[in-house]
Structure formats: C-alpha cells, structure tokens
Length: 97
Length: 198
Image 1: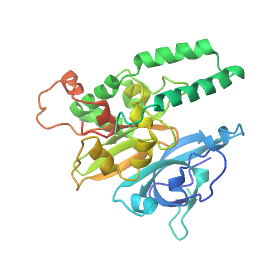
Image 2: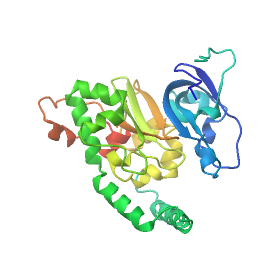
Image 3: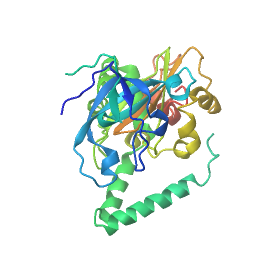
C-alpha cells in the first residue's frame, strides 16, 4: 500500500484508549501534529502483540508542539506513528498521492 | 537523576526472564541460539561505535550528509550496521546545530540504538526520565548538569515504532586539527542520547 500522508500534512491521532497494548502513547492521543517523514512499512505492533494477523502498514514520524500535547512548553516532540492511528485534519490539505 | 532509581534493572531483568521462559516454552526460541546471538551482538555493541560515527561526520562533510540522509547505508562505510539483532532497525541520526538540540527517549519502553551505544544506562529506562523528558526537557537536561542556551529549540524524539535514533552533537570549539580517534574520545554516551552537549 502507498503512503496516504506526505510530509507537511496536518494529522490527528486516534482518541481511543484501547485495553490492549498500543504504540500510540497516551500523552499523544487525539493530538494534532505534522507529518515529518515516512519511515517505511511495519506490522502494527498493537495487533502483533495480540497474535492477530497484521500486514505491514506505513509508519510516519510526526512532529507535535509541546503546547498541543501538554498545554505548556516551547519544545517539540516527535513520535513514530502507524498510519491506522492517524487521520487527516479536516480542512487541511491532504495529498491523496 | 542517575542513580536514583534502584531496582529498575532487577525488575526489568525479571520481566525479561519471564518473557524468555514463555518464548522457550512455546518453542519460539531456542535458548542456546538466543544466548549465542546475544553474546555475539553485545560483543560488538558499544558507545565507541557511536563516537566513531560522530567523529567521522565532524571530519567528512560528505559522510555527514549521507549519515543524515540514510543512517543505515552510511554505517556500512564504517563497517557498522543496525542488523545485529533479529532484524535490521532503521537508524535516524538527528543533528544538533547552533539553534536546535535533540534528545532521545522511548516513553513506552526502552528502545535504544544498542548496536551504536551498547546496553542503555539505568536512568534511560527509568519512569522518571521517560515521563519527564517529553514534558520538561530543559529541566531534565539541567539535572544532568547541562544548561542549554534558552534560545536553542529542543526536539524530543520518542522512539515509538521501529526506528532508532542517535544524536549528532556539535563539534566542540578548539578541536581543529584533531584526528578521528582524538575527536571520538571527546564524545560521550550522554552526548549521543542528547543529555550532554558532546
């Protein structure tokens, strides 16, 4: 599958708090950030940890302003996030590639 | 903050032994093979590798550009690789500049570029470091005795998937004329994680 998001795209992370293992840290749930770069495709660890079948999915480095995560701070935090945990921000440019 | 979190290593070791036992019980790993692979991997894994990479990048602008563009391919030039474990991990090298500083963490567990830095220090795996450095990196750096210029922007890289990160520190002033070995000797493990200047 091809990458859905290109660098510079604004994205929002999932809000849900699943009971199982998730590689989307809680502090970054529902946050809006910017795609920095794609980093290839990997099986979704959330599924693999539960023994579920999982095809490789695109993973992206996403940059967040600390203020958007913690309501304070001048720094940035980047996270590596699987595509299925990201959605486009409404009204933002999305490259359909 | 190092040294404050006694017991972390023992707790982790117990958890790892438990997982290992489960994997062996289900026939997913052969204990002898696991020991051999770990021994061979750890014999080569050392912060000296990371220091060499940095010294070469300081001396060779072409290597530096290749390293920042594609860490895995550039490592091969020094006879190094990220393939020492079960699968090759993607390496992303992040460069400190006059305006920007980088710090590495894994808030979910303890992901770390072991091939280039050796086993991680206890504080790196502590809940205190993992939870605080994303929220207040400047204060955490100060606790390491590193007072970063307030004008320098900080990026904290949380390794939450399959990429491993390495910081390329700034070359210290007054090191003109030093060869690769002498430059490598200036680089510390903490500098490669981003909690020290070099």
